[in-house]
Length: 218
Length: 218
DNA sequence: AATTTAATAGGTATAAGTACCTATATAAAA
DNA sequence: TTTTATATAGGTACTTATACCTATTAAATT
Image (cartoon, rainbow over all chains, first blue to last red; front, side, top):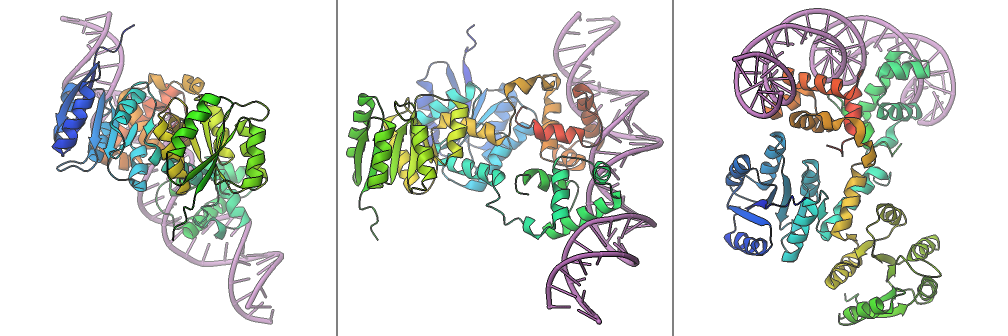
């Protein structure tokens, strides 16, 4: 089954030089067809109309950033793999990118062959990150998996409060927790309230979110 | 302060060809000194006696695997950065490697320049992974169950329903989702209802629980 | 042309969680 | 001994989510 009829790729970067260079590299590949956009708006328009399989987006762009394009694409449930091409090794930017489902994250400082590699990897359904970025990912992973980054305030909690958190993390309802511990549901609610105050949490599901994200740390 | 007096590196691989090639590449770098070992035992012996800063270990080796060397080094609390050089993109092997504190993971199929890059990154205190490997880490991070758990019925969902699930997994409230997508909260509620029916979920937090646990699968 | 699916939006009722209070018994600490 | 921290329980008001309903529009299928 030859399904690679042609991979249609939109390239969005406000620097003509990078855009042209990238286009030249990609055009030398068989089965790849490219379209250029010089800002996010143009890219999004093309994505909506032509439905390319892949979007290679510069993050920093006028009118609409690559980040905004990726978010919008996700909101509209458009089936496209997004690859970010950026100059900055910014950790929080990277984390946000992962949150909105970006499949590839390549640094401009890297070799041109890397972007080809990235495209092939993403087409196969995998993620691709520049190795310099993988450090962030490991840290991110370790943050979720270890109590070393314990500055969250969990140490302020009493034993029963920690126990409560454990059960909240299992997504048990207050009623279920109350029954399991043979205490009143009001007690459970009070514990939750107290925990929220100690951890400075507020709003719907705030505690549940915290509990799930830190479930390894208590 | 010139702290790079010389980086001492031990290379352990049972294939002389790879060993020599690697040595040649590294010796062309300034400030790097190499020692060769043709199996894990030799490598460990050298590590104990000469305390090199970095060990580049093939995982598959006779007598003692690179994996065993890394574990032993960790047990003896020897201060050394371990880089695995391997042929296999094996996910469980990679996960185990992360658990024993390996700092770099490079595939042999990759360019020789990658290993140089890896060494510099590791020396600076960061992690380095071949991009093909970072995919594993992302999956690990997304706390995925295997693709076998894919039988959960997610394939029954429409694109907007999957999108809804993504946002539910981020623990956004219906109100927040509605605002972000510029649709009525009732639409959001209906989507949730439909998803619950399709996935045969019911009860408090059932959807949220599902979404969080399967957040890698959509 | 008729039917189905997807996305949209509304109604009504109930259940669950959050916010902010008070209050008591007990054990540990100042 | 008085104070403080912890675990317990209740009240009240409000917000959010769930469970079933109906219904319209557009797009895709039959």
